[in-house]
Amino acid sequence: MKRRGTPKLNKKFVIIGLLLILFLSLYYLSLQKKKEGMKGKRQGMSPKKKKQNKTENKSTEEILRNKIEGFKEKIQKIRNEKEELIEENEELERSKQKVESLLHNKKSIERIK
Image (cartoon, rainbow, N blue to C red; front, side, top):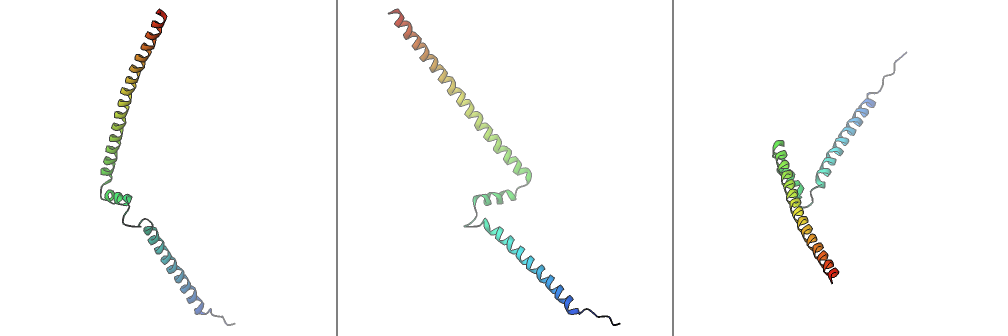
């Protein structure tokens, strides 16, 4: 019995087909990266991108220090506002007491009449 040989042509087509699929998928993925990168760019750089570029050059420690300083400033502003509100509240309490005393005086004067 003779053995039938498989034609070498079929193996070549399979290999060529697989290579074609590989290259097409690589091409598609390279286009995807370009599209994703182009989404953020419309006209020039947005302020977020500029800020990110500035922070990219800094080390992580510097970035964290800047954030901590920002938080400290925010806390200080909040404390100042709180102190101002406390002072305003005290002034309102004083004026309330004055008005109450005036009302009390007016009532006492009416009683006397």
